[in-house]
Length: 193
Image (cartoon, rainbow, N blue to C red):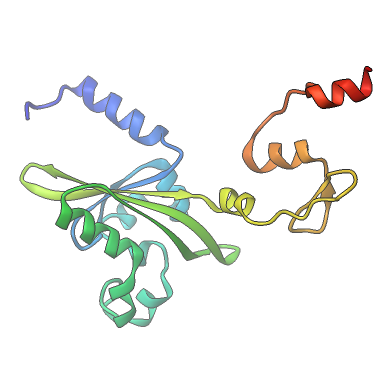
């Protein structure tokens, strides 16, 4: 692969950082070699140099990584870790691997459960097998996939705080979807005979 120009490198970094998904370049031990702005925010911000070379579970403050004196990847529970499993399967099969996962993330507000779509895509860089690890928060989408309490009469939706809101407002808030309005043929007959 020919060396990249400074301009190509700058464009790549801009695109990498523009992604709304957390992106990390990791090795086979899930050590972070590089990450984008979204990943840095997910990991609590802070000093970039402090975050580099840490393993995924240590970065995400995994409870199992905290229990083991050696950290991430060294406890019995790490054998079933979704991040480790995705990286391993991607490297073994030399193809992109995707899996949904529920992870407990420790933040300044406490522990929260987050639904992620974990994508691991292997690539070779200067003779080293690496993985681009993408963590996409799909919690809102999964909430909408489940059962939504909706009023049988007015069609307002009840949210997780027991607040009833218009269908349009609910979809705007959780999916950033706007609606246009029209009248279906059946209603047109009823309203305008």
